[in-house]
Image (cartoon, rainbow, N blue to C red; front, side, top):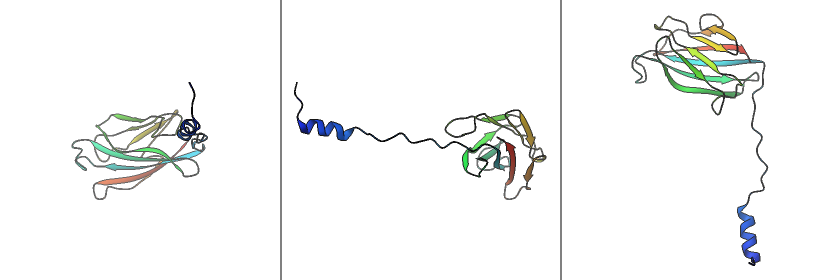
Length: 136
């Protein structure tokens, strides 16, 4: 079977010689998270709290998080390593049962809460904001 020059040129044009892109990896050290906790019955969630979490690496680059994650009273949610989180281990958030309860966090053997280890504001317009740091 013979191939024409046009056939070979078309086949080569469809083939990509591009080098694979290097995946951005987080910079370890002191990472941070910014958390927005919405009160129950806000944003159509009903009787659960809702969280938006932004994870930043040691140089402040965004490396993952979740948006609008509902968590029932006294239950946990894991942000697992993968496409939505460049951390090498899971980050766990645990909700309380009333607005005054702290949110607890765990990462790679460390644990802290929104009342100890975080800068946490009060509820305004149905949500509160907090910033926490942790070794990553």
